[in-house]
Amino acid sequence: MLAALFYGPMDVRLEECPIPQPGHGELLVKVAVATTCGTDVKTFRRGHPLLFHHVPAGFGHEVAGIVAAIDKNVRQFREGDAVVVANSAPCQHCFYCRHGRYSLCENLLFLNGAYAEYLLVPEPIVRQNLYILPSNTSFVAAALTEPLACAFHGIEASDIKPGDTVAILGAGPLGLLLAATAKLRGARVMITGRGTQRLAVARHFRADVVIDVSGLSSQEQVEAVRNKTEKQ
Ligand SMILES: [Zn+2]
Ligand SMILES: [Zn+2]
Image (cartoon, rainbow, N blue to C red; front, side):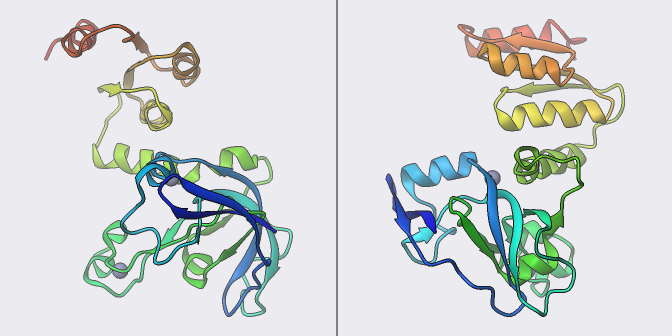
C-alpha cells in the first residue's frame, strides 16, 4: 500500500509499505477520507513532542473508512462496516482516567497513519473509540468527528445557555464548528473572520452576525464586536 510517512519537520515521504495485519483485538480500516488538522500542519512544520515514538511514522489522524480485516476476537464490528476512527484512547487506569478526565490521561495512546491506503487500529481504540457510521453520514463529514468533538467539548465547558450572546473570534474550521454547535445550544452567535468562502460557511451555519475583519486592527475588531452587543 502507499503511505505518507513522517520522517521529521518538512520531510514527509510517500512510500510503498506492506499492508498491516490485525493482531489481537485490532482491525484494519481501508481509508476513505483523511482530513488535515491544524496539529498535522504544525507537526509537519516543526515536529511534535508526543505524537511519534520513532520515525519514520504514520501521519494523519482524522479518518473515516471501511473495515477491511478484523481479528477474530473483535465482535462488535464486521468487515464492510463504515466507521470513523478516533485518534486516541485513554488507559482507564491512571489518576485522571479514574476521575473521568480522559483527555488528561497520562498514558494517552495516539494513533497516526491516516494518510495511507490502510490504517491498523490498535486494540484500545477498537474497544473504546471506534464508531459505526449511520447510513446517511458521508465519509467526508465523518472524518471531521475529532475537531467536532473538540467544539462540543468547548461549548459544554463554557456552559452556554439559550439566548446567550457568543462571540467567536476566527472563522477557521474550529471557529465554524463552534458557531454551528453554539447555535445548536440556542445561542446568539457572532463570528469574526476573513475570506468570503469561510464567512459564507458561517452564514450557512446560521451565525446571527458575521463580521469581516479584513483590514481591521485588533482594537477595531473589539469595537466591531462591541457594537453588535449590549456593550457589557
Ligand atoms: Zn485533529
Ligand atoms: Zn489514563
